Image (cartoon, rainbow, N blue to C red; front, side, top):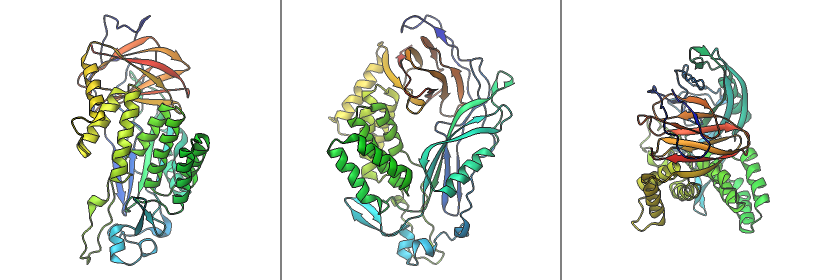
Length: 424
């Protein structure tokens, strides 16, 4: 069980109790006809046994959303469609033909539509879904409606507090529609993204934000479009000294899901170059640059776990010189974590939530609350999701067996508090 303990200052109290062993979680990837519906929760999947401090619940069934694409339905083994890809075999294998402008591919013709639907809803005590709310993403009407309909008819194992079924509000899910196309930009967006860049250069941040958000909502067609615009928004927010929003934008820019390379025709002599279809939405060079920026913003906000996790991605993908400033900062974070010194971080909720990736420390404290924070979800790798009521001037600990954990705070937009990490 997780227990919270009130205290008057940010110092650890002498006694604390930690949590019982969690069960496994999962996420579902569904492919059909060359399109991937990657349903990733904004955090990990829900869990099972209850806490005295709040409910938790198990995933119920498979999170599968089957979109009826109307006239574009076809055999899964024949994903090339002449109406979209043309009949040229090379074009089929590339997943759309593009030209290079300023280092990024731009489609000569409209690509297959991709999309993201971010939803929030309540899982009722009987496992049904209610209060489905669309909270973000980019999409066409067909995909949006199919996603909302699919969520509304999903059944979960009932959330429980102890043995009592309870409602679980503010449950988040991200649904990604991915097509068998190379990362490239929709042609109509090229001059408009240049306008965003020009506004940034002129430090006209308010207009740049308005334009970038409008393009995201109304003009983005591909996941590459989405990621590029999120990267530009991160620059806007950095210029406006809104670092929490900048970090959220960089999280979106550096996301990915399982790529969907096109399949060769049975008689094709050309092999599909699957390495050209990265899981990340951005092209490799842009992705690495966005990761570097994400590390710097996370480190500046003392988001120690997120900074070190981002550094690990950079190391794995790029490798960093021994004298790299990023490496130096990462080593400083590790040294601080190994010391007895408490590490404090300001937390600010963006759009009513904030995700904090934990590091090597297992004890956390909250204080200095301004605004309203209602709850904390604890989501760890291969574990159940657990929820507890947020209590200001309190602390709690996680067992060592819980690894790669995230703390997800829910409350009023703009609420803020101090989070402290303790060595023990």
